[in-house]
Image (tube, rainbow, N blue to C red; front, side, top):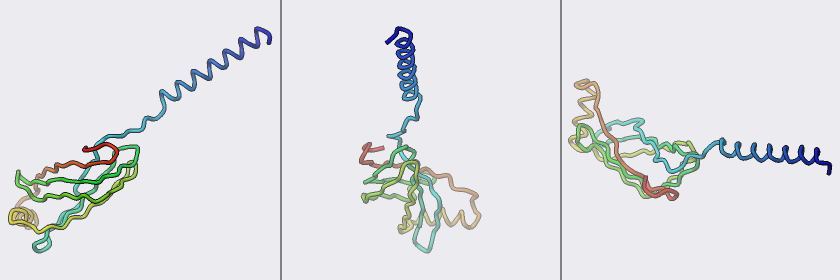
Length: 140
């Protein structure tokens, strides 16, 4: 092979190698290991039953297999709802699953939600704390 063709071929091979390295380095990174985001999508008091709907959103680029969910919802430092479930829940990458809970409402829950329903208060500041156990990442 003449030296000029060899130089062109080696330059082309070097450029292709550099392009492959840069493409890999700048390519999309799959996010994983982030805790899901949970929010309250609805809550109502039906007689003596507190019904709540929650959305659990997987913020990862890979699916999440959850085998344990636990959380506590508080209003003004008072426990309104406690939930724990050990059944399997599979959430696709960047997907959302809904969880519906019905529990007997305690006196405090009934009082707080009734005061909101009757307009005695305009809102109920709450906190939602909890964790999940994912088969891929352990407790998050």
